[in-house]
Amino acid sequence: MLKALIFDVDGTLAETERDGHRIAFNQAFSSVNLDWYWSVDFYGQLLEIAGGKERIKYYIFHYKPNFIYPKDYDNLDQFIAYLHQTKTKYYTQLLTDQPIALRPGIKRLINEAKRDNIRLAIATTAAYPNAIALLKNSLDPEAISWFEIIAAGDIVAKKKPAPDIYLYVLEKMKLLPEECLVFEDSHQGLISATKAGLKTIITVNNYTKNQDFTGAFSVLNHLGEKDQPFSVLSGKKFKGKYLNLKMLLEN
Image (cartoon, rainbow, N blue to C red):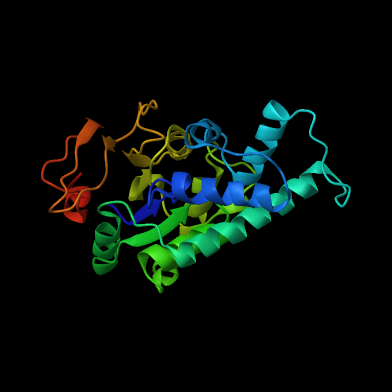
């Protein structure tokens, strides 16, 4: 029996990557006088690397191999940590000033789960402050209290596509994989959840629509609304205009 819904954040709850994180990264680079700029298309390539600090390190090693970090820092990792911390400040301010809309069906499905006492959790590689900022500003000021577990950032040693973040959530909630359903948007997220034994629904976005989602329970363009019907791209062929909790409980 379905007891819990577990949500990824970036790209799943909202289209935060292009118009949120990417912009904040570029602002952080500019703030320390770096001429680095991550375009919309290039950032899509960098999303193959999970985690903000990991993404910066990958970029330096592969695109700026001659970069020398400022003398104010003891090592490169310390500088990367500062850059990422600065980026997080810009991102949370961006969400405060101009909240990013949730994807279709997200708020509706979460409210249905709350109504029917289905437990809720977050499992994301995003930094904890980033996840909290989105929940508060785009979902509801009290949304943090709706989620039993908010597993984010460096809470586990290995990030997606490793299963660690999902195994952590299962352990903390004392649930079996078959009692949960995951919502993800990316190939890496699917691998992570699948390795933890979790059934996963994918809602693709512009960055992930061409990725391989073999093994997903169902792949949708989004969860849908009454006036914005969803499309099933592969997997379980849900009927109707939008995915609701009743459908999930029956499947």
